[in-house]
Image (tube, rainbow, N blue to C red):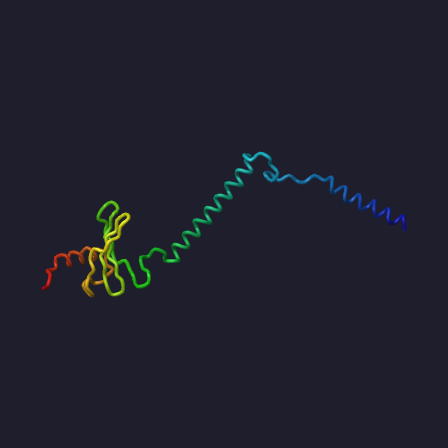
Length: 143
């Protein structure tokens, strides 16, 4: 019995010592101590480009399919807008059945005019905002 146990111990010892003394295969860049080695820099560059591509793709998908920024929130809709200065705009907004002319400047939003119901035709043709404004401004005030 003692003879069999000693043979098993020798066999197990030979198996584990060969594993313990075996050298690991060196993979380029995995055990490198130089942070600016070509392998490390290429891994960082590929990883960074991959992350930036993923972020860009997600942003494009969100913008494309979520209809973010289409100018309509519930019953409110931006009908038209006109730039009147470097940072100033005039915006025509439809809120329910009413149209509002709003002036927008840095740090200030002001209602310029509230139109009566059915005073402005709600069309989506280019140039309709300018024509509607001309019509309203040239229209004589009825007493």
